[in-house]
Image 1: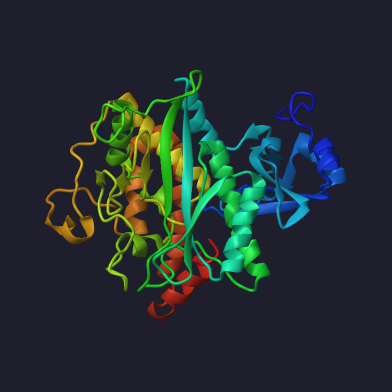
Image 2: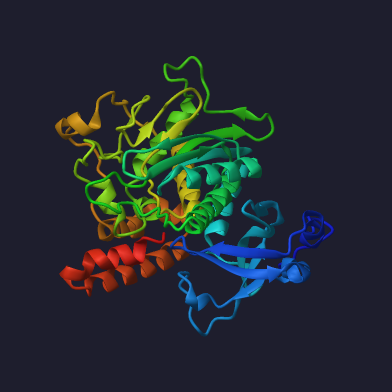
Amino acid sequence: MLRIILNMVKSLEKIAKQKKIKYFLVTFVDLFGVQRAKLVPARAIGEMQKTGAGFGGFATHLDLSFSEPDMFALPDPDSLIQLPWQPDVGWLASDLVMNDKFMDQCPRVILKNQINNLDKLNLKMMTGVDVAALMRRFDVLSEICDSMIKLGWKPYQNDHEDANGQFEMNWDFTDCLTTADRHVFFKFMVKSIAEKHGLRATFMPKPFTQLTGNGCHAHVSVWDKKKKKNLFQDSSDQLGLSKMGYQFIGGIMKSVDSFAAWLNPCLNSYERLNAKTTNSGSTYSPTAVTYSGNNRTHMIRIPDEGRFEFRAADGAVNPYLLQSGIIAMGLDGMKNKRNPGKRLDINMYTQGHKLKRVKKLPNSLEQAIKKFSNDTTVKKSIGAKVVSKYVKLKKRELKEFSQVSEANKASWMRKNIIDC
């Protein structure tokens, strides 16, 4: 059975006494990136750590029916975060279990499977994310940043972004599973603190037609686990990137259009990807599948030695699926020695239209789902079963949207996506 042996891992019961935690939020994220939770008193967390918190899976976006047994969220003690604004509550990320087996469609399990593929090669992926969220007022921003400092995330800059009330918040990079857990918690924290101040924060990709949308940029490097060496770094290269790094980018360039449904998961996502020029004269989102040096008009930029920034994903992305998708595409590139082609050193917003035969990202969720469901690399890396379940749920969403009248489509989209 999948039960944690307490003498082999951290005891949450003991940690609760040491840190004076009274309650735990045992959480998981479904395929649509919606965070679900059970509030568990500290007195019960010992048993919960062994068996998991029970959920009725049919009520979540995991393609489960009423006839299936309960699923259990098995908390990972290494993911524990005390709420900086309410330290007697601890937040825990979980892996989903059903019939004593980890569930294939659990996003955190999907990411762990991809991490295992790297582990077989003695590699690990280190990432950081830049998340732009719509909110106003310094008091909210500073409380969020102060909270990250308390948590030891090492935030290093907070920028006012292009749109009104839009900020990008950056914290230090680490292994990709920890980054994904922190990304999930960050969204919860931002919304909670904003609400405390009487405001509402959203990560919706394109809340306002005339303003810049919300992206989610990942900074990526791959390291040798034993030597703790950045394998993407090569000072002899003009941009400081190794051959392995370029092959990793090559894998992304080959498959990113097929993974768009994974990285840009909602109808509103494609208003950001294919946006017209905003009031500021820019969109801050990719227009094509291209890479460059330190140039933000491209889907991938190489800002300095040993890493690249992937700019295609948006604020609605499931944090676990973002990281798993990057690994899947990158591993394919490394294994098949994919060449990303010649980099482009042009302004894509002003000169991109002159390019011929450049690959484009999908124009709609419907188009993205079709490419995702038919792609061999996607099925091979993620698994045909998971792909089938994700596509089924997304097609259901598309069908629901198609039944909404033209007059009500904008309000439907805002209502269904604003809380992402």
